[in-house]
Length: 108
Image (tube, rainbow, N blue to C red; front, top):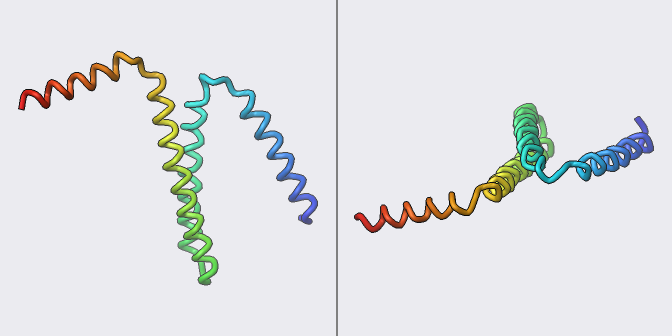
């Protein structure tokens, strides 16, 4: 493939991705993030496999960088998903948990 075709596919993918994500309603963002985290897990496994098959130091360095970046991306996605799920919990559920912790600490 020549460079023009690759750039055209990339630009088209950016526009399609933006349109798809912008049309998602706010109630579906948490399941969408969970699905993205699963995809990032697959990318991490792929980066580990590539690191295993690397033959030169450059290949190994690039694959280790891919492993680090994929790990950061996956962990960050889980943190964001956890925060989003916390928003759906009622204020009463959070208050009850804190009260239970305080009463357990006072009994000691």
